[in-house]
Length: 399
Ligand code: ACO
Image 1 (cartoon, rainbow, N blue to C red):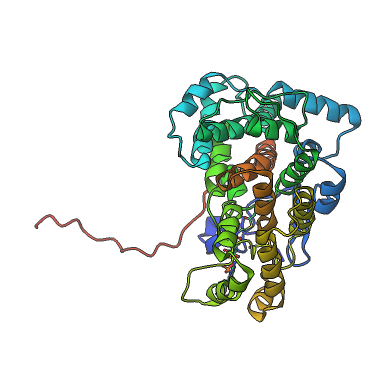
Image 2: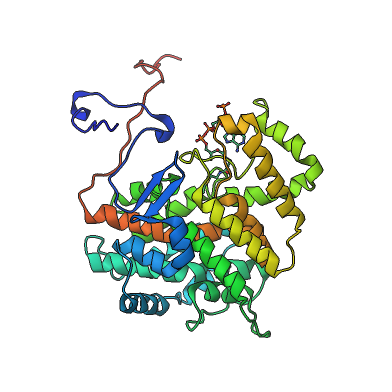
């Protein structure tokens, strides 16, 4: 049931809904989720079908324009993305201002926000062509910036994008190639990376997307809005969970210690939560987690690590949680982050980059929502509050 409160606002009536559990902030035609049934559709297409038949750039096109591209439209889209993969050389100097050991998400917040200062042309947000160019710049430059962060943390030179490679291959190349070694991208890894990108591309009005819309509703620069989204994604209750899952699996260390951690997660006096379990919207199996689990098996088989100890712990945890009444009653199923960390670790991506990769993938969702909002009628987002402070009192003039 939807209660439209627009007509009530001017009469001093408002809803109090901490955490926005029951508040729809906008109309959107991009993504549909039925959390009870475990359904996720992008522009009507089930996520499992997109993961199987589509690829990330095609999914980007779908999210941005609303329809799957023809083969000519797809080729043109890919070509345009490739035209924008380079970043200004001055961005490198900006990067060098950060400490080498800074968290890459901290650097990404700075670098992406700085794009607003480096790319000041085509910045009329009311012009659809300008918005499109901002979208292209973001889709194209995010992998370049993410790989620059990684290389910087390793003390290695930045690798320039290679536009003859696919989006996922190019990202892996910029991450792992060095000027002195020939680097061949493993196709199984590139395929797994592409799946990770597709599965994280959008998820309607989550905390980071809502932040991008809220920032954008003031008319702010799109790069700055995306930077606000990256900031929100960073937290362990949101995108930071994939990093937290791996840390947790490593801390558990052995299947024999799982029960101990399950009991900790159930103890209400202990703040510990089983990372990678539960979701604000899904009260069923996260459909993205199913694809991720299969991809995880493929990558570990390719590496001959099908008996990886972390995967063993993950699978046993999943099994216990699906049977334990605590998790069953609360409908706490594995979410998308549960397996993505194991895949990325196997590929050689350090834990600190996991959330950066989530941010890269989600950029298309953020910019599609921003574009959708600006394309239609919208108001500046301005939630109300329930004031619980002091009532009016006089300033003490005599002390
Ligand atoms: N481990 C143990 N108990 C949990 C967990 C968990 N992972 N998640 C929720 N619960 C319990 C809560 O303690 C609460 O129990 P209670 O009713 O007895 O008090 C109940 O389940 C409901 O939890 P809420 O916190 O009210 O649910 P909410 O929708 O606010 O939280 C969230 C969702 C933040 C994702 C939560 O499940 C969580 O912290 N999970 C772990 C972090 C994680 O994996 N985040 C990734 C989300 S997916 C993404 O961002 C792509």
